[in-house]
Structure formats: structure tokens, C-alpha cells
Length: 146
Ligand code: SF4
Ligand SMILES: [Zn+2]
Figure (cartoon, rainbow, N blue to C red):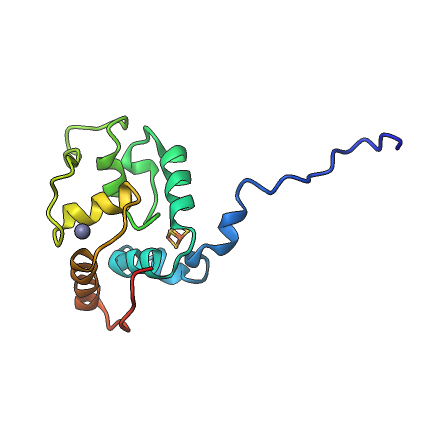
């Protein structure tokens, strides 16, 4: 076959998972900084590509200061992601690093953050607490963690 000057793109696109991102239909929630609990719930309960999103977010944001991170991604706020990344630049007026040691008690915010950051399953204690926090902001339908 004669060379045509182009290379067929037979490999799956590296970011094909983004087509399935649940946030793409929920910009009003994800763009509103007062609705972070709702955004987190969408990530956990409705998004089938949260693991891919987490890996992508960790690699693209690694080392960045909080000011250069945006909104909720993979169920974590920009501030949480900054404080969980021990390679990131930290200024004196930033919140402290979030220390995870595996002993975080389920039902606490730290445990939920650990589950999300380490891509662990989210148990009912951590989930119920987060849904309650979201409900205290807005009326939400009951949803199950995926
Ligand atoms: S996990 Fe990532 S891709 Fe999925 S809804 Fe959340 S921010 Fe969007
Ligand atoms: Zn838990």
C-alpha cells in the first residue's frame, strides 16, 4: 500500500473516559462553589469513570498550588486535593497538609477523603454522613454509592 502521509489512529484515545464524565451534564453544580457536597455526591454515586478521573487529576495537578486547581474533581475539592498532595507548594496561609495514616475512623470527613484520594470503596458510614451534609444544603433525592 502506498504511503498516504497520515498515520491511522487505531489506538483508543487516551482520554476516551471523559465521554462518560457525569459532571459534563452538571456544570451548574460543579461551577458553583457553594454546592461542593452535591458535586461530590455526583462523582461518587453517578460517575462510572471516577477512578480514571482521579488518576488523571493526580497526575495533571501534582505539585500545583491550590490556586491553580479548580473545583471538585474525583469527589475532592481543590483545597482537599492541594492539602493531600505532599509534593505541592504550600504557603504559610494555606491549610495544613492532610495527614493520612490509614487509621481514619469511618464516618469522619478524614476517612471519606482518604477513600476518595486512595480510590478505596466508600462504606455506608462515610457515605451517609456526606449525603446528610449535602441535604443540609439542598434537597436531594436518595442515591446509592456506586
Ligand atoms: S469523578 Fe471526575 S469525571 Fe466523574 S463527575 Fe466527578 S469530576 Fe467529573
Ligand atoms: Zn469510611
